[in-house]
Image 1 (cartoon, rainbow over the protein chains, first blue to last red):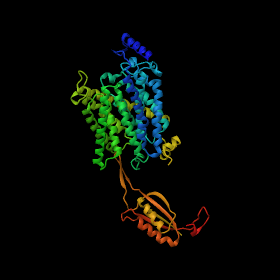
Image 2: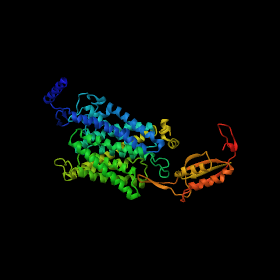
Image 3: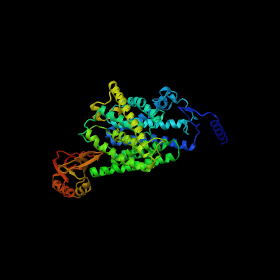
Length: 439
Length: 112
C-alpha cells in the first residue's frame, strides 16, 4: 500500500538523520524494524508461553498423584496470569529500564505500566517492536516461578503460592534478570547466559530446593509409594516443553538469523543426547529404560544447553548434553535418596544442577576449538570460567537467601503448608472444590 | 442357593463366562479388583525411586446358583480359569439366604 511505503521511507529517513539514542556508555545504532525478526519473535513468544501452559503444567501434573492433578495446573495457570499483570505494572521496568545510580543491580520505574512501549516503539539495539520484546521476556518471567512449583508440589497452600510468586519475581527474578540481561553487573562483567541458565533455571532450581526443605516432605514420603498418576500427561508435557524450547533458546537471538539457527540446532542435539544418556543410566542401573527417565533426560539437556545455546556448536552440544544427562540422573536418582529431601518433581536435580553445569561448560565450549562462537577478544577461557562461576555463585547465594526469607515470612503470616488432613485428602478437593477426574 | 465368588486372572474372564454359560448359569457380576496370595508383585521405577507393587489386578466373578448346580459351577470355573501357574485365584462358596428378582418380585430358586 502506498501509505505503508511512505511511512517506511519517513521512518528510515528519521532513523538515519536522528541522533542515535544513548544507552549506558555506548551509543547504540538507531534500530529499524525487521519484519523477519519480528515474525520469529512473535512466534517464539507463543512457543515459550506454551512451555508453561500447557507444557510444564502437563509435565508436572502427570507426575503427581491424581488427587493433586488440578492443583499443579491451577498453580501454573495462575502464575502465568499473576506474573503477566505484575510484569505490566513494574517488573518489565525493573528488569529492562535504566536504574540510574542503581543500574548495576536493578532498573528503574521509567517503564512502569509499560510506559513508552507504544505500537511503534523499538528497543534498541533490537529490530523488533518493544511490545514483542517485552512479551517475549515476560514468558521467561512466567516459567521461572512456575518451575518452582515442582519443589513444593502436593502440599503448599494456593494462597501461599500466589504470595510467594508475586514477591519472588519482584525480589529475585527481576534483579537477577537485570544483572544478566538488563544492563546489570553480571552482563557487564561478561557473563555468558544466552537464554536463562542462571536467570531461569538456577534461580528456579535453588528456590525450589529451599522451598522443599522449608515446607518439609510430603506425608508418607519414603514409606508410601507415590508414583506418577499419569505418565501419559507427563510425556505430552515433556514433548511440548522440548518443542517450545526452540522459542526459548532460538528466540533468545531476538533475530531470525544464523545465531537462532545454531541455537535451535544445539538445543535439539543436547536434549537428544541427554535423553539417551539418562535412559542408558537407568537401563544399566535398574535394568529397564523408562519413559519418565528419557523425558527427564531430555529436559535436563534442554536446561543445560540453555545458557550455552548462543555460544556453542554441535560438539559442545553433544558434550553438554551428555554431561547433563549423567549429572542430572545422578542428582535426581541418587543424591535425593542419599539426603532424603522431598524435591517432588526434581526442580533441584534437573534445573539447578543442569543450569549450573550448563553455565560452567559454556565457558569451555564457547571456544572455537570446540566449534563455538569464540571467547570475546582478549578473554581467556580461564577468565570466562571464573566469570561464569561468579554469576552462578551470585545467583545461588542471592536466590537462597532471599527465597528463604520470603518463605519464612509467608509461613509466619499465612502458613505455607496445608494441614495433614487436607494433604491426605488431596489439594484439588480441599483447595479448589474440584476433582480432576470423574471416572 | 449358593453365592459363588471367584477371584481369577483377568484374561481368563471370557473362558469362565463361556464355561458357566454352558452349564446353564445365566447371570454373572464382574468386578475389577486388586489382590495377591502367593504370587509376587513387581517393581516399578520412577526417577530412581523403586516401588514394590504387591497388588496385582484380578477379576472377581460372582454368580448365584441353586444347590443342584453348585458343584458343576465350581468345576466349570476351576477348569476354565486354570493356567497351572501361581496366581490362578480362589473360589469361595457362601450360603445364599434369599434372592429377589427386582422386575417381577420373584423370590428363591425362581429368581436365581
